[in-house]
Image (tube, rainbow over all chains, first blue to last red; front, side, top):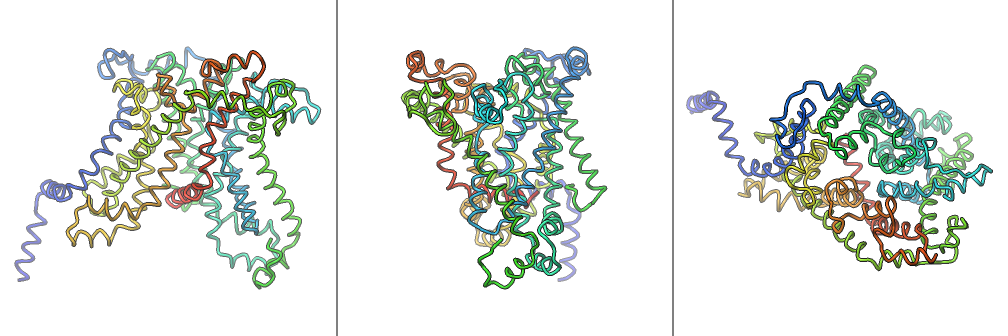
Length: 318
Length: 305
């Protein structure tokens, strides 16, 4: 009996791996069938555009299609750096991205820590519910509001008048752009962003607080030594994920905030890609710039992750 | 903190000892109340302007409370077929997108949750690549144009239907339920399709509800894709109707607004803000009922991340 069993086992082990793969594939044909449609969507709509990226290296001709258009090497990239005020666009992109990250990133953390100190459940729930509302507002609605609030008779100018400042059109020019852009991002995202921190804070062992009380720790010390360490892993992950977005701003919002007085000054890479690549129809130029951004963003994520890893390997994402 | 609840000994210890605790609480609560006011004031302003008389708006007499009640703006918006058509199409885009997205993601995530599935590795890698690299706006636009999807519902619905991130979240959820159940069902003679439809799906109702709501709200609020792909104005989404009346002109969309606007019965802001309210009202009405699911969804993401 044992003899036959072992020969059978050896026989199985010697089976051609390709043949075994197809036997398994046949056995699991229902599972394979389930994957076909969704994977077809992934191939067409995610991998299709990746193939289309090739036109960054070509002189794209719609009649010839992607493959038969003529190769131009790095000509499209060169074109961007030579013919456009590329330096200004890149600087503006970095400015918007870095300032947004600096100012929007801490807000959900502050809000979560503050909410965590509230003992009255009802009050806490109410504040949370209210703080999420702006997240459900579309960018068109936000920009419609900014448009009116910043106008001479708008809400923001009413506030300015309250402090004795004169009324100005805050939508014209670039003076108030950063304030509006970042302020609205905080207004929309702080409450919503605090959810994941609050859920991390809810897992804190309450006995830590009791011990801290016996040691006579004050509220700030408790936040500093109990709450902050509890959310540290989450803050790190959010930072890594956000660092990849420095170059890809909310360009749909910037498009809506542009007007004739500031269009050129507010241009960032992503609005430029849209304007050149789609509105003007220079597909190859737009794609080349877009490809640069994608690559730099990827490098940014990997670098941030590497930095985090070198400081504390446990906090890194991958 | 909890000052009244002295009966609980642990809380009592916490209260007695915290130094400067009350002043901290006062500052903290004030901060949160100010945050809430900052969230709510813009909405009150919008409502106030939309409901005030043209005269009061022009004289800048409206702050956050309506003056000389005037519902003409709402009459214009809701007497026009445009708004109902936009509601209808936006709802259709949202519902079709949600159904396709949830069904396709579930179909893909279930095989990936089976531990000895042959194609698990290659499919996971293919999905992972899409998380870190994408073709970008222009190639996607060209693709949709070349496929002849412009001006169709599919241009809005198909591209984002299956995302790697969501698939991995679904898979994590399925893994939590399916292991022994699947084996038992296989022994009972059920096929994998049957297991997915009549065992896994009913157990994942909360998951589906959460992601459906994410999808519906996302679709309701998006304007860019519809702006790119939908050229037929009569099939435009609600956000783009709002965009066109704010950024081009009120009368181009609501032609019956031109007479009351010239004779001063209604201000352009009345109409714009009435339309803004019409855009956000459906979401705000269902918000209290769906809030719970959204928080759950965010937490699913947090666990995975």
